[in-house]
Image (cartoon, rainbow, N blue to C red):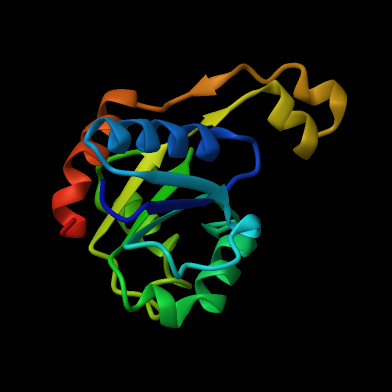
Length: 166
């Protein structure tokens, strides 16, 4: 086995964590050693040969803790291959406006890193998530919206080893 790959993620309602887990499983099936941790729990990048960073989107941008992770670890991240995945439930179309809006999710990150891969995955939103954002009486009318495409997620992870030059 090679030196491990880190998957660091920031999530609000666990959809990003679940996607990070699926990516980790696929990379392990490809023979890679993978650690997976929330960005707040990562203390050093010294032992990793590559890092994948994933974040949910809030107010049109990555979560603050994911942006802070990149800023804090920018020097180390610029010495190894980095891939980014973004999890969102808006701008899901293939039209130019949706594509432009998705790219804008990474505006705070792009000046800091030169990722070898970027991908946008549709996420999940459910009644529990809604209850944290909306009044309780309104949240109970929110259906679960799960737009995740697991085949796409696994395919990206399967091709990632080549992108990371591992």
